Length: 139
Image 1 (cartoon, rainbow, N blue to C red):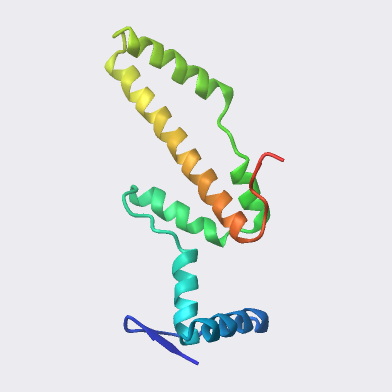
Image 2 (cartoon, one colour; image 1 turned 45 degrees about the vertical axis):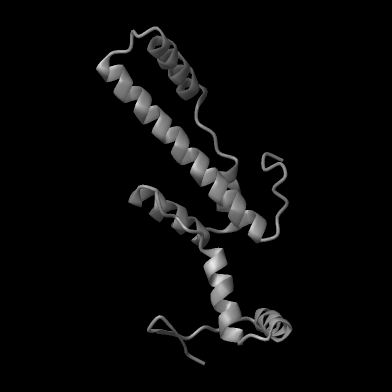
């Protein structure tokens, strides 16, 4: 049955168990099933405003990965050399001895770190929504 949301008609084939859950929620809250499903989709798609477009797109794409791929991202780290270089550059910065080139390198390394943290966090959120215990993702 097509549903119109903001002018967009969609057809969605749900497994029976999901549709039954949506029906129960709709009945409990005295709302149409369509509204319950729209809310569920809106909740599953996190707001990614305020991020660079490339990061927002990459984070949104994580929703389409399988569990194994998400676990790999949730457990990913940067090489030790990355952290060592950041530490060395931060030490130079504190001493006001950082060159313009080193400043650019530091900014690039910090952006890589921020991107990793965002990817790991989003992967953990998605895994938790899929029913996994994320209290210690390294296990």
